[in-house]
Image (cartoon, rainbow over all chains, first blue to last red; front, side, top):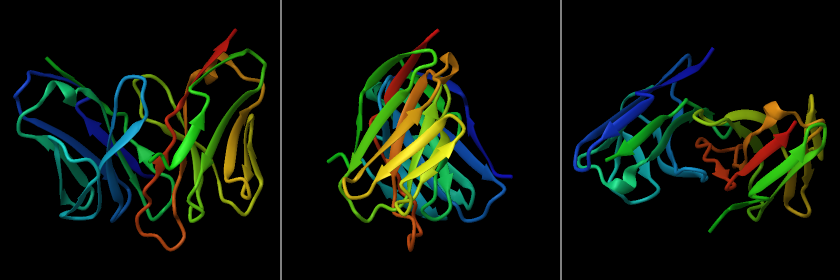
Amino acid sequence: SQTIHQWPATLVQPVGSPLSLECTVEGTSNPNLYWYRQAAGRGLQLLFYSVGIGQISSEVPQNLSASRPQDRQFILSSKKLLLSDSGFYLCAWNIGGLAQHFGDGTRLSIL
Amino acid sequence: QQQVKQSPQSLIVQKGGISIINCAYENTAFDYFPWYQQFPGKGPALLIAIRPDVSEKKEGRFTISFNKSAKQFSLHIMDSQPGDSATYFCAASIDRGSTLGRLYFGRGTQLTVWP
């Protein structure tokens, strides 16, 4: 069966520090991968998606970047965090146009 | 532009009652409509999904009703329970003939079921 892992579960970072969040998927090949951000009590904002290794599409220009160094690995990064980067970050995967499956997210707090 | 519009934003229902959440879309190319359930601190989990070639799909206490001509679909939770208290998201995507399953989400409905 397929599983998705995100880590860390929670993270507290100072303003201006770098960020690296990792997501890996097991049990499937060549998945589409997605990064979302969810503000407290709000909806899901799509940040990046990838259809293959090295292929990244950005939905919202901002302080973040994404990379896909391996087929089932998706990384969200920032060189310098801003206060506005706080939120709940979710990774998801799917095959084709079917339902996406989400990880349990990373709660990021910027101080 | 919000591709999928969801209402209400919040909903309070008594235990045993029926919870109804509505969604509407504009893009007639959408052909896959999933609903997600999210508990605090967790990622959304797929609850139930429907394609536009059927008007209703039922799984246990959860039913999706789909009106293709009106471009609307809704989630009905029968015999609502306190454990159903969560945030619910509707979504839509273009599945057939698509290699990218980008989902367009509604803004979510926070459901509270009182015991």
